[in-house]
Amino acid sequence: MSTKRPDRIAAIDIGTNSIHLVVARVIKETGGFEVLDHDKDMVRLGAGIGPNGELTDKAIDKALFAIRKFQARSKASGASLRIVATSAVREATNRDYFLERARQELGDSIEVVSGFEEARLTYLAVRKAVDTGLRSTLMIDIGGGSTEFVVGYGDDIVYDDSLKLGAVRLTTQFFPNGKTDSKSVAECRKFCTLSLAPVRRSVAQEKIDWVVGSSGTIQCMGRMAMHARGEQPNGRLNRITFTAAELRDNVERILSAKNTEGRAKLKGVDDGRADVIPAGALLLESIFNDLNIPSMTISEYSIREGILFDTIARSYQLKDFLSHEGQRFRSVMHLAKRLNFEQTHAEHVTMLALSIFDQTRDLHKLGEIERELLEAAALLHDVGLFVAHSAHHKHSYYLIRNSQILGFADYEQQIVAHVARYHRKSPPRKSHLDFMSLPASYQSLVSKLAGILRIADGLDRTHASTVRDVDVRFNADEVTFSLIPNGKRSLEYSMWGAERKRDMFEAAFNRRAVFVPALETVTL
Image (cartoon, rainbow, N blue to C red; front, side, top):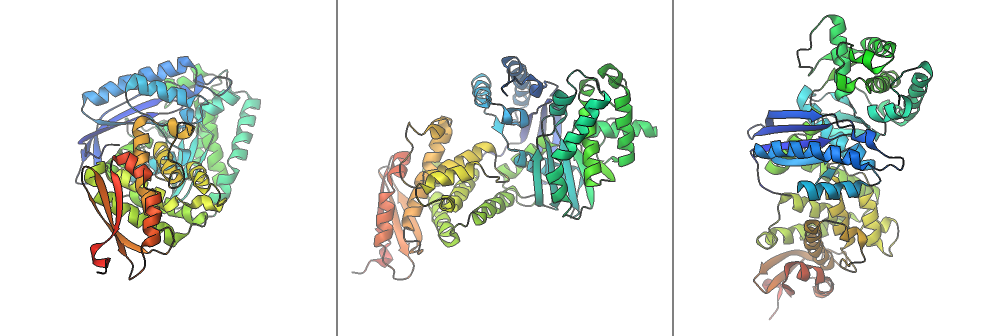
C-alpha cells in the first residue's frame, strides 16, 4: 500500500470472461487520466471451474499467462499497477491457492473485490464516462459471472446489489453446447426473472431519470442496434443509446442464428463473444422487462477505469468526486449504527487513536490509507457487543469481515477486521489461523494499528472521555504518552487501562510505552 503519487497507473481486471489491461497517464489537475495502452484476453476463467467450484490448473495457468503478459507491459511503461479480481476468483473454492500462486509467480498481490465494491468502482467510472451530473441514475454492469446494479444520485449511492447472474455463468447453465433451443431459452428467461426479484422490488422504490449500461454484452447490443439503423459504430460507443424495442430485435436475431458460427456472422457480434451472447442478451432483456427500462445509454468505462479513478483518489487524496474517503466513512458509520455501537466511546477512541497515529508518523512510516483503516477499525472495534459481551472482539472481527462496507478492497476489510479483533485480550498467536494466513506485510500492519488502537481504547477504559488528548514523544528506547485530562478528572483508571494494553504496541515498535500525566496537570 504505497503512499507515492504515481504519474502513470495501470489496472488489470481479472473477470469471469476476460482479463483486461488499461495503462494511463495521471492528469493531476483534474483527477482524471489519459489512456496510453489497453488490451484484453478472452481467458474464460469462469468456464474453467471444476465440479466442486474450484478453478482448474489449466484455467489458472491460462489466466496467469495473460496477467504476466499484461504485467510486463504495464511495468515497461513505468506504471504503478493494481490487479483486481472479481466474480470467478471471488467464488472459487480454491481462491487462496490461486492467489498464492499468483503472488509467488507474479510478485504482485491480487485484490479480490466484493460484488458491492465491484459495483462502486464501476459506478465511479460510469459517472465520469457519461457525466451523470445530479440525475438519479440506474447503472447496470453485466459481467461473465455476476451483474451489478447501482442507483446513484450524483456522488451518493443509495442502492447497490450484485447478483450471481452473468453471461458465462448462464451459458454454462443453459447453453453448454452453444445451441439455443426454445426450451433452454424459456428456462433461462424464467431463471433470470426469478433471480431479479429483489432488485425489481428495490429499484421500484426509486425515481430513475436514466439508465446507463456497462460491459461487453451491453456494448454488443449497442453495436447491433447501430448496424440495424444503418449507422457505423467506428469503434466509439460512449453515450450511444439503444431502446427496448431495438434490444428485442437484437435478441430475436441472435436466437434465430441457432449456433455460435451463425451468431459470429451477425453485424456487431465479435467472434470472442458469439458463444456467450445469447445468455447475455436474454439476461439484459429480462432486466429491461422486469425494471421497465425504455432505453439504455452505454458507458465505455467499466470497473478497470474505476480502479484507475480510485487509485488516483487514494494517491492524491482527492475528495471531490464520488469521494472514496467519504463513501468509506459513510459506509463504516452506517454499519456501526446498524449494530448499535456506543457512538461517544467509539468516536473518542477514534480521536485518540488518530492523534497517536499522527504523532508517531516518523516511527511507523505509514500513510493516509493506513490511517483510514485505523479510523474504520476504531469506529467499529466494539460492534461485536451487538452479539454478546463475552469474546466481543471476536464477534467484531466476524461482523466486519462479513459485512458490506463500500469502498474497501477485500484485503483492506481483512485488515480492519483484524485490527478490531485485537483491540483487547490476546495479541496474535500462531493458533490464530486467520491472522497467520495474512501476508507478512499485512501482519505487521495489523500489529502496528492494533497496538495503537489498544492504547487508545485503554485510555478510555471508563467510557467517560476522561483523557481529552495525548501528547506523544519517542526516542530509541521508549514512547512517552502524556495524558491531558478533561477538566480536573482523575487519570488513574485511564493510565491503568493503557498500561494493561500496551503489550502489542511495544512488540510492534520495539520500544517501551510509558504513560504519565501531562505536566500542566501535575499539582506540586
